Length: 453
Image 1 (tube, rainbow, N blue to C red):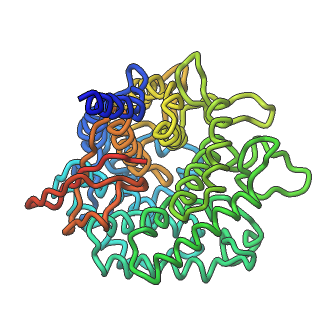
Image 2 (image 1 turned 45 degrees about the vertical axis):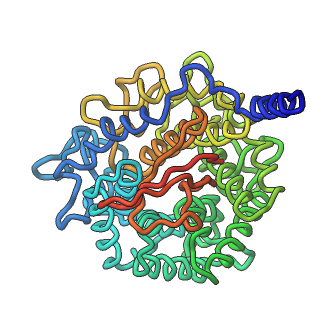
């Protein structure tokens, strides 16, 4: 009897010892992120003006209220009077943005099981399949053309979609090879000399990290090898140890690091997130350690305690740029939440950051999130759909917020797939997770996960 009681006590003590600590007070549960998707995001991307003619030819430029930009009948001054980086391009569509919108619908299906979202994702991928590569496309452009189809393949395992993705990937890595193991920005002209972080980084985050672990061989092994090579190259050639930042571009001699192109908190934390995920996927503990050692330094510098929001970067004069930028804010949240899966203390600022996002970034009247917001005056904000902003980052932010929130609260996450899901062949986005159940329903397979890491 005493032995049995002692054994029971030992089991209980072991259970208590391994039980994860609670999340910080005020951290939203997953249902908050599902409601955010339904209430704040989906309406902007499901109104008729969002869908294009034919459906799938999604418009790049839309007004604050969601209406499609039309120079003659609906000039929406917030775009027409914007800087030349937008106003010079208002009469064209961008494949990279149509692909980002395709990704949005994929995430919306993934989180809700709404079959209409899956059909819109398929329509977007079908439109992209018929479009020629744009003249002068950068390697970053082509990476984002992959984004929507990659999400669709992850959801459906459609071999035709995969064939498109594999062909584009092979083209990028062949045509843009810089001869030193990384990728060029462009293949012709004076800009061929440019060396851009995003040429490497956006191959990883747009499609390769998501697909590498689920590809058939020999592609799985090849892509993992390429991912490790890109991660090593980013660290070796773009990381500045003294500043604790990634260079957005390899600088000319004498050029200052701070204030240079793409040298900011967003690109740095995004690169660290991708490197950490690649390290886990490829068994490279050195990459995981590098990212986890340096990410807290970046997060500490980016956090503005007084406002409970993330800053964007550091200017050339070393002052803090406190502007709230939608994609950078999302990436900072996502890396913070990822770190918190292993270290709950890392989540201490997340409740405040999420409050800032919902209070200042979301447009409660016409939906979606603003591109830029003045942290001191949220009425000063910038467009929600243009040549570099679509539904990608807000959708990923909701998906990662949901997955990590469920895990941090000790609850299972449920994701929809559009194939006959098998536990050995399904992942929780870019996270590892233990499959706890598969429920097959008319709209697809609902897979539940725990141990999301």
